[in-house]
Image (cartoon, rainbow over all chains, first blue to last red; front, top):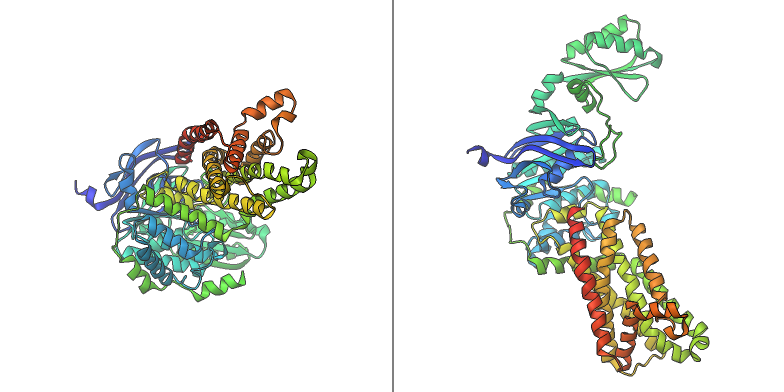
Length: 327
Length: 280
């Protein structure tokens, strides 16, 4: 079969339950070699559990998956030889220095002491950590830690890399740096499975995308297809008077579709297919006598994607870091 | 915080260097079981180097015990401080090293709360290597800990009859026993929810067991049932054997019992630890 050589990851019907909760409930994935595949979903959707199964850390209860043609359960060592994992919690040893972390991994991966030190120095310099190499990781900033984490994943350049929410909690500058590193990895031929909560991140990096919710894939396609299916953007409006929000909601629902009431009591947003419809909706608000503080047309947020795809809000931010279901 | 920020801004990833680093196709054969275990042992030593505090309390407590018991209770218990010091020191060696074993469980539990274990488990290496390696590293710590107690004793005038070979063989035996016992605490470390729970459970078990042994007093002075318990407590047998090795009047049977207990603990708890570790 040609698909066996073309696909880096192929999963069929993966299931994993923790007690009563089906964290992953029948996930299928097909990730082309050399591509970035995004898995988009809120906390508790089953992203991390899926990655942990594919990285051979936990065994699926049902379903099968191969990584580069190697079966997860049957040939875990062959899978481990081809992958590396950058987990959601920084997968580096906080009590060691940056250099010691990389030398440790180099030694475990079979480098001689001298070669491991040379590789560590090369990576630390490339990732802008040369000056901090001798400092204990505990004292690193979030961005430095992430860079070290990714450097640790490419001590031996992997064929397949799992990145679990690589930019959650990072400032925009550090986030852009991580994105640049991911692009460089892809340019060199590494296949990347990227879990993220941010549509923008998936949009920036991913060739293909699966949206998952409650352990199931609810939509799949390229970021372009996905956005086309829910409208290319969202209209966000802040009102001068929060008391007018119900009226604004009515108008926007009539003009554009399902409205998201944001945490800010004066803000509403709604998906809009194009800028013209958005502009007309703003005009309708003005005609209805609703006073607007400011408005913007932008990327739909994950909230809006979820609302559009599932008809229910995504509970973003209500979950824990772990995979305990956020309901 | 401000220094971190400064460092962060100073060091951004250099994209062409990143590409060069990534394009490396060097892929050596991963380390074998022995090499990877010793690499993890090295990791354990590095932790001691960077976080020496964690060894401090398990070292200071026994030092205080030596000084307090020798100079405050020694005269009353044994008639003279010198005589009691000679009785107590091998016992404190045992106590000190066994207390340190609790930290093997604490360290393992701490590891599991961090993401680094996931990375280790996704590497193409022998699965028990991280566990075995940290046990080897810990054994080096037991050795360091025991050495401190012995040097303290020598400074206070402890001159055992069997000399240096006797002391070294006692130290080796205590470390061997500690290796076995530490598997119990790694099992505890995998079952408990937090590092402090592991520590509390560990000390709640090891503290009374140490006092219900002949580390501090001869069992003959105790009431009957207590004496019976103290006599069969493996910690008593270990303390008696250490004294024997140091004074040159050890009974071979006692050495065999100590080693048998160490092997038994390892045989039961090492596989249990490995299984729990794999599932965690």
